[in-house]
Image (tube, rainbow, N blue to C red; front, side, top):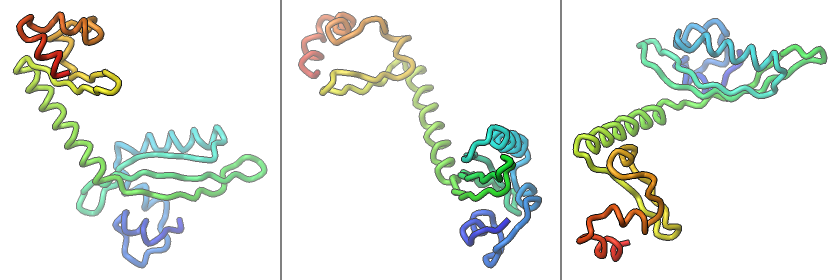
Length: 166
């Protein structure tokens, strides 16, 4: 495989690397991801697709995982046999770490809302739509659509203040 300096950097290869083998690449792909990668590429070629996209992990020499997005173009000969693949690898590691942190934060918020038996919501005054936390259905009747119907769920002494705030 001919590779760029960027590929070498992402994959932890020596700086001057211009070529590597498919076997070396496979040796660094996370063992849990390799079977699915094989299936996806074989399916793409069997279907004659010209594009192939995949996400997978590679392991560097310290066994640290890096997430890779692969975007490839497959070239076929006249007989429909894949002869060449040209692609780009994008390092998604930081994005994946950020997504994991966000998911953990969302989980903590959901747990806190449930424990406190409160809900969170967001209100868009322009289109008068709201988004509610997942536990909202446990706290209010979700069938109460619209502000007027929702206000019937608000304590009578608080309705006018609530309506004014809206």
